[in-house]
Image 1: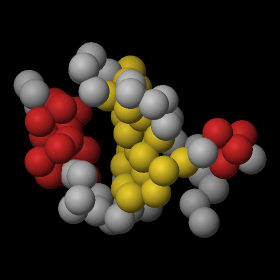
Image 2: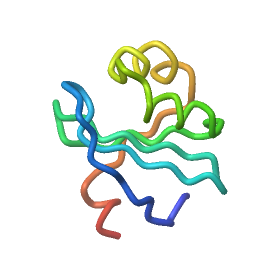
Image 3: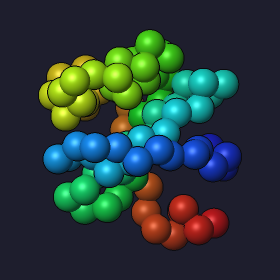
Length: 82
C-alpha cells in the first residue's frame, strides 16, 4: 500500500477540487468536489499529469483520459489520517 503523502494543488474546475502527482511512483490523486473523496490512480504517465493540469477543459480531460483508463482506488478519510 502506498504510504507517502502527495502534495495537492487547488484546481479551478466544476468537478475537481485538488490534484496531486508523485512522479517517482506514477500515482495521480484527484479530489472531487462532489463527495470530497480522493481517487488515486496508479501507473499514470507524467505527461497525463501535465495535460490534466494544463488543459483548458480539465473536467473533460479527466473523464476522457483518466477515468476507466487507470486502476482507481477511492481513499477513505481513515486512510488519509493514517
